Length: 402
Ligand SMILES: [Zn+2]
Image 1: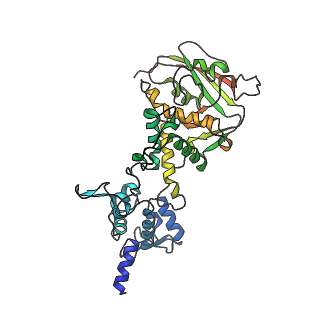
Image 2: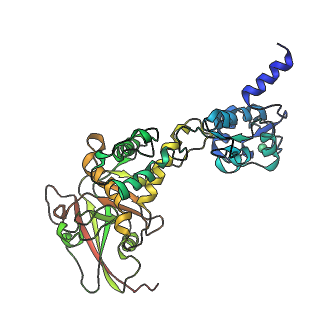
Image 3: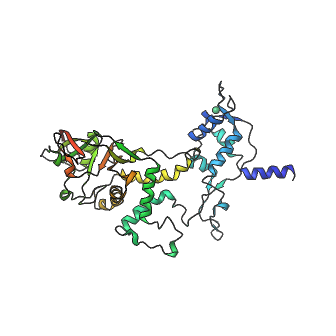
């Protein structure tokens, strides 16, 4: 085999051609995964892009960096020909439009580099068009779309008898599109364990709960704690009408915002400070790590699962206007809450959920599986109690004019 042929084969296999013989330092890239890679593999002390010179090794050969970038991109992208995407010759194009390399490096997985460095990275790369695997007839329905699918099924198709869903032959290949809601629930609980989202809140943790009234002041644990079941007449984010749960917040201001809604005239807020009487395991939806960079080889394989959980957590914190659609919008989170409450066992047995408040930026709220009997007064000692009322204050709220 001639030298030229061997060289061409090499270029074909690695996906890029001649690279300028330059060095690049980690300061010149914004993506943390790439910075990390350069730091760990640096062989030089100078950078040809920002002209920094250091006493330590801060740079590596541009070719090594491009090689690494290509390896990373290929974990999720491939040439349209290899992706299984049908080519519609009559329509004159791919069924799913491939993504341009520039868009991959600008938007999908931003390199965050100077224009010069961007050019030097992109120019040697052979393939300008990339696709994701066309593994289902609807490739946009990736795993992280499962939550949307779950919401649709629960809201519009099957709510009480999920088991009765039959997968017809016609749809068998659409694995995610016709996923059984129970599989999705299992998937969520596995994810909660894998991402270490079960946390313990220690006994003595303070949680505030607010009750509003035009004139009346409330003062007892039974009045300020979880509503008795018979009084739970409204659907809530995590509980349907008739089911009563303890909703509270880490701060008084968050508890007031969560309770008052937007169209309220002046009112007295009775603010109960409760303390947990025992350690409680809860699912902490606020502890979700950010989606890792595709260039972070250590934890890149968690990208899909975190994207999925992110969507799920956003729904727990999404404001829903109190109109006639509210009872429908709450259904998926109500189903999940009931699942967490009754169907998880062993290590997964939890007493509540911690989530970001929909009504207060940076506010943290809790829903606890605690009933009215389990909320007790400060002097009381009841064996099965879960929350003790330790302090009560009052605040007059002025009318909110929209
Ligand atoms: Zn530099």
